[in-house]
Length: 254
Image 1 (cartoon, rainbow, N blue to C red):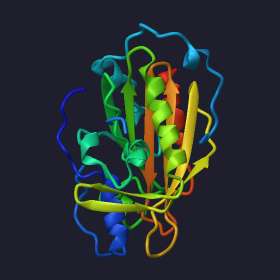
Image 2 (image 1 turned 120 degrees about the horizontal axis):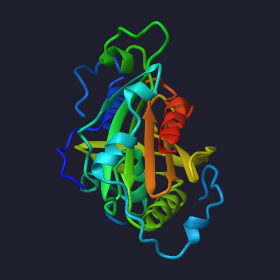
Image 3 (image 1 turned 90 degrees about the horizontal axis):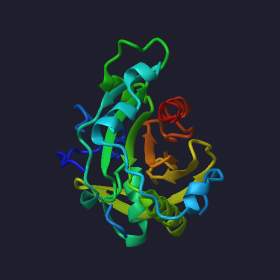
């Protein structure tokens, strides 16, 4: 995996803004080591097959495979060079590390390459509104999506870890990234059906105003794993999965 510059993740900024009652938050956003059944897992012979010698996608192939602006209407999509490293995601319970990494769309350390984009859902009639206004005043859903590619069957370890982590940490955990601490009250499964196999969870970030949901989706197509984390500044958070974005990414992976 190519080295990347550490940038304050979108989720950390969003939770910080919410903690300040939104209006007090200003300025532009500055963009896994190993440590329940969620969603719908499709039958896949490869998931239990003998060790594979298939190589993961190259960086160039992954950059081409990740969803782009031309693939998605009603959204603003941009490549995000600010992928944070797993070592920057600090949890209070080690068992919660994989689901915390997924919350920030961090690729697993076994990934041979990764590509990341940010996508903002643009409300009708708001195509000329600034990105800052979209995510704050209009509370448009923002999704960090990372594609990661793996050699052989290494993806099996990645998926097993995040599923086990989500189940073990259903009662919540705390995670700190770039000096911003997020208290996750609960991790609950959600329904999703994408790619060869897929899972989804809703994480309650536990803000003073009440429950605040952030959705996390993980799905696999072949040796490539997509991880998407969606948040919004609405009081209740992201109630729905980013279906248009997820469908576009699944379609592009074939």
